[in-house]
Length: 463
Image 1 (tube, one colour):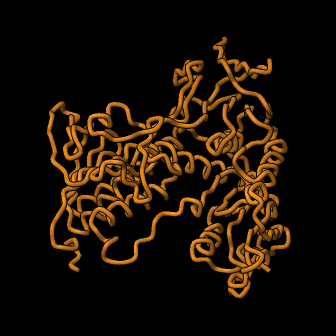
Image 2 (cartoon, rainbow, N blue to C red):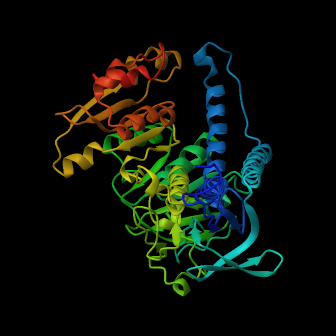
Image 3 (spheres, rainbow, N blue to C red):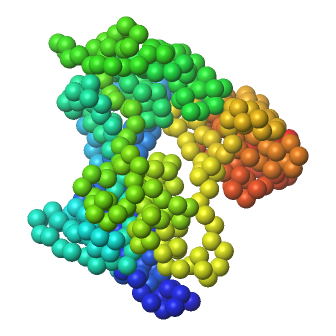
């Protein structure tokens, strides 16, 4: 098959609304397969959630990590140095990273012949999209395939009078107008704990409002406990079992009132309580697309109830991860162009997606979790090895955390795992491959890892 033709030799017209990881990946793959592709994006090519949330937060965390390393220089045999955060320089660095990433994605799309339209797209029917460009011009595009990948935005409850100055959403904080003296974070999920770590490392006092009895309520309790201890050791104040219900602006600060009567007072408050899909004014009803709470209902091929319309990324209601969105985009292009009929076509197994939390220590997991397996009555084998046995961890002066592997006791197949510690986000890739490829713990044991390396602990945990 030619690189620029689909099975049967008939080109298809793709119209993609939303230029995040899902939309851009779909666009490039479809174009390579011979489709004529138009990509509509009203904000940033590369995705607002990706470039305005994910990338800036990780850049800020990296800066905080560099500060921590320099402050601990004496423990590595170096003279102790004092470091100060330059907020303007950090803001400039984040903008430079965003600009470079957007430019590279834009260049890739153009190199594949993708037409870029800056504006707002809206469904008119299962085969038509209306575009209102940023210049105000209106164009109607005919399409054989329509892909919706409009992403999501931070959820703002009615009781939170966000002002972008002292009462912030996540997108107001990369970085905020001023470094908070005392930041109150509402929400103890992945985004919330990353902000706690981030601003604590910059020197801000931090209070975390935790609505349940552990941070990261969807994660392994043993993993969450390590992070809680780390936060407490660093002076973070935890309001456990408290749900925020109102925010009061006071002179030079804010108060967050909780449902149990407790009140947190600080200079700023940041909301990290989930997101909502960008499906407003998308024309779902006009095209007959079924949605649930604003999310497009999709099948295992990411196709909606309308055969010509697919959805990827946050809008699909699946895992809100850039890696998942990109994979969905590729799978949509393959399915819509008929590659599933030409040979084996693997559907996305969302249960095998690896994820990471960029706190200190880092946290990463994949596949079956120990607590979930026990709750479901599944038979599993769990092995755990601490990083304190690792020579490389001692060399790094950071032996916190552990590797935990969940496997099938009968076959030895790796079912999942969790890693807490330095570079957990990188190390989890080994376990992710093992889970996806149905490798066994013996396969890991027989692997010849580098010495000294943190990865050696993976082999030891598999024994």
